[in-house]
Length: 145
Image (cartoon, rainbow, N blue to C red):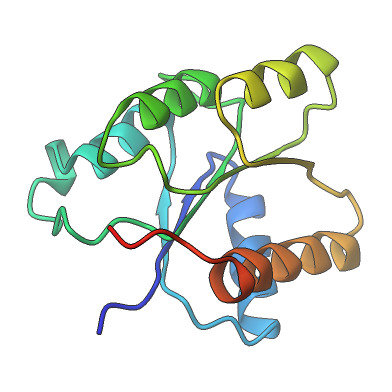
């Protein structure tokens, strides 16, 4: 049985480490795949480039998407996710430092399932990640692909 993967699209190494720590300390054992920019995220989801050998049937159960990314920004990545039949139903949580109303509105217009501003306090950051994991990976009912 394939374990539900989480795809983290994040260019900040400190935030990647905090997410990894939060998941492990919350006993969320799902595999975490990390990509560092928007172009790499699209390659991952399309099984192209460095990910051409990735099993295309094993899509992530959840995508945590930063907005401020190199190469292709998070809103463009979200737009691509929602326009592709293979990825359009994957839950996408925007997990970003931006609290700009225009980013929040545009994220929801493009089909984000939720928008969370990264807490600065580590304990709150950890709690946010753990709650996201529990909700989307355990409690949420997903369509069968």
